[in-house]
Length: 281
Image (cartoon, rainbow, N blue to C red; front, side, top):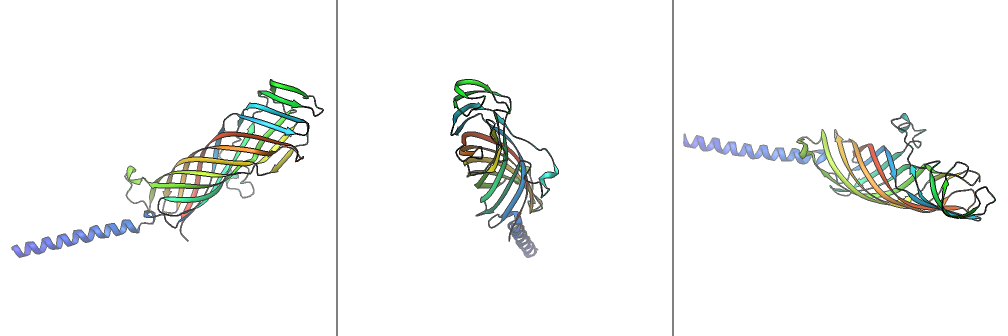
């Protein structure tokens, strides 16, 4: 009887160890257990907010600064244009493509296609001179001036393009939501830092000059972000992000003449929802 008991206990211990090992192997074999070597790509939309900005306009016969210009974004809302290949650049969008260099860190490139529109008819203080043979000629010294369409229309609407690279960290927090099988659903926390160039298409009408609307590398930007990623069925995800940053543009094209330019800097804040896929090649 004693020998039978010992034999049974031995078999039970071996079975328990084997079951535990098999469970550990299953966990290790989960596609979502490791990220190293995976690629990801995403597409989404954003809403944007901007701080007030001092904007300086320079030309052959004018040099003036608008103090604390107010601007806003130009949302499209939920619209089929986000997935229409012929019209995908019309809404405010975010594209990103990246690679996991290890389980927790990734590097990515992308374009944040924001839109920046000066609020028309606002009153702002003007400082500088205008001698362009226009009704607005004169010397301004912190002079309140209405931003009429005849005086100035100013927007980066195709758009305020922040072409950037990001370095991000990713952490699986599925256990906080008591999710056991992360291959079915996984929750990740992500944070990152970015840097890049501003390549806006600036739409401007200034002092009655012909409208100008062209792409031009105008400056640089930096950004920080934090987001929550929910991955479904190993390969598909939705990600919400909050991103803030600084933009400095010292060479903005404003008219058809290369002698004319503008400069400004400001902070921005994005709210982003993106949909994407993650895979290995």
